[in-house]
Image 1 (cartoon, one colour):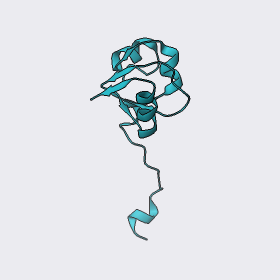
Image 2: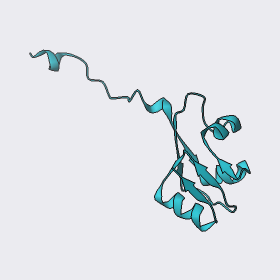
Image 3: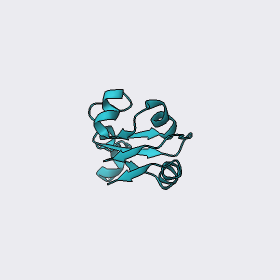
Image 4: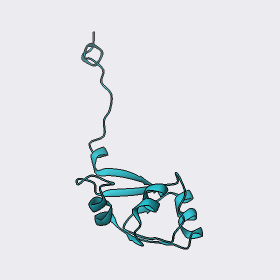
Length: 90
């Protein structure tokens, strides 16, 4: 029997998962800030201290104009932020 068939099979767990986080539009609306970046999200407790990359997902609604800087967003979240009068800076 070959070695690769004798060893137990294990799944894959990415080592980079602990450095990525997701934030919803409703979380940003509750935050109450006009300018949002990674540091502001860490201070508010929405993401962990080890997080290096944040992505805004389109869950919930946003009612005020916000400016995202250094935070990525999905296509739906980007459309919702821009329709509320906000902007996304790279």
